[in-house]
Length: 125
Image (cartoon, rainbow, N blue to C red; front, side):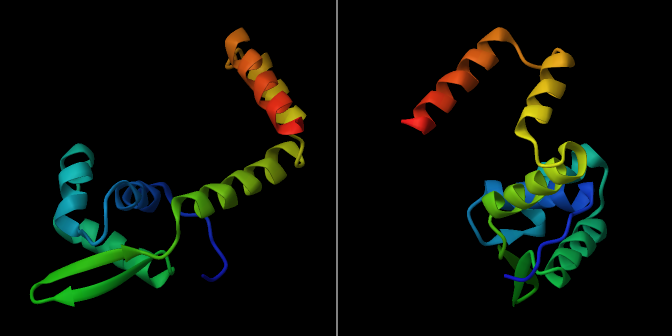
């Protein structure tokens, strides 16, 4: 796997469908999940998926008239990459800064904090 790059939202939406399904994936599967909801036509989905091939996120095979796609980047690897970039860019790699932002913004409940504290205790044991 090469160096990962941030995906535009539209391509990330497609990758979420790819990761949620067992390979191989077809454009028809993506259309079922996103096409109607997003108002995309088949050529748009095909174009986005071929971009993901060029970027090294998918591999494709042609089977007769149908093209199938296989993920080359695991969801966990991409989320780790994105989270790392987010932490570096917005929180200077400080987990405490992230938690403070969430807490001050009322996005963390007391039960979330309790769960986080329990998680920390388990990791330290």
